[in-house]
Length: 177
Image (cartoon, rainbow, N blue to C red; front, side, top):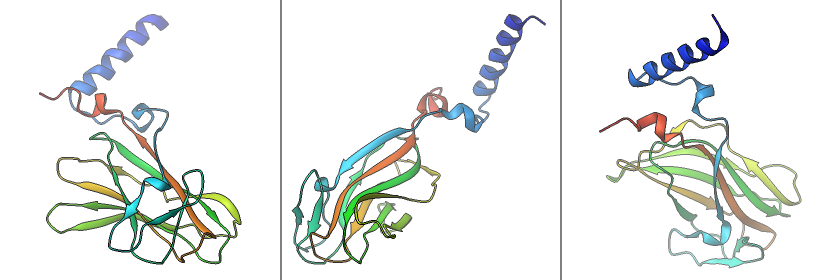
């Protein structure tokens, strides 16, 4: 078979699988992440604890230890979240706790990832969550990024979060309705 005809047959078979509702192989889901970035200064206190103290370049610290600071995460419906990366400036002996939590609207919640910036980094650094396989369902769930400080000091600063996700929505639900 000549290579041109082979490509046409391969493409036709791929389209037939899509129309039949077959799942795409992992390599076909997109080869590059889409990133969502949010600065630490965009987070707000969840409870009644005092607000954060702005340091520099989007980084914040806490004036007193308290509840989490939070940010509502809004990504396209059907996106697949793979990683959460937190950025910080840490010259203290304690760590930040970073979480991504899903809420169902009727009182239930699930921590989809919780991790710390543990290690011997002194100064600016980042830490990566374990690999995730979270599918965004905006109809039935809401999601929030959360950060808790281990101390109230300029020695522990939170600078932001970057979410790595796939948003190959066309192939996931582009043929509905």
